[in-house]
Length: 138
Ligand SMILES: CC(C)(COP(=O)(O)OP(=O)(O)OC[C@H]1O[C@@H](n2cnc3c(N)ncnc32)[C@H](O)[C@@H]1OP(=O)(O)O)[C@@H](O)C(=O)NCCC(=O)NCCS
Image (cartoon, rainbow, N blue to C red):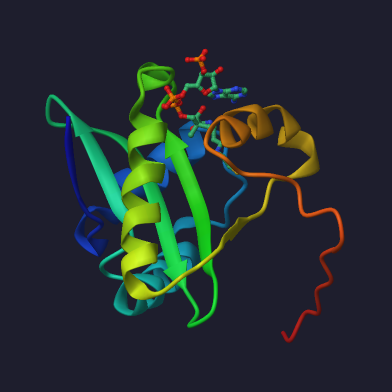
């Protein structure tokens, strides 16, 4: 298993993997523009994993100066349940800690609640005293 910093050069394969893993994501051009900006700001904490030369998983670790956020943790269905998701999460956690994050937050969609089992095994808990609010600027 090879884990390396994520590069925008591989974005077509990355976007395919996200779709095949079932992430709910916009079409490639829109997502690529966002990914470019994310990687410019978070180059040390976003990773891709390769199994025998084939892209197997990704994670975006984002530090906003206060908290670390995890987005787009995804492992290709052919490679799930082999420890790749756990390895990517560990790499992003280490990198975010190094940047100064003391707590990591992440979203789990209500139609994907089963995955909380995975995160609980890695020490994540539901934040009971908060709800998420949003506002669209565009
Ligand atoms: C969630 C995900 C990244 C886990 O990656 P992975 O490489 O399969 O996980 P690992 O092999 O490191 O860990 C496996 C453990 O987590 C648990 N687990 C993994 N995926 C799970 C899921 N979708 N639901 C419940 N438990 C899960 C397993 O029970 C397993 O524990 P066990 O070994 O004791 O049985 C992967 O299943 C995935 O890409 N899912 C689709 C995309 C997604 O939902 N991403 C998260 C968005 S918030």
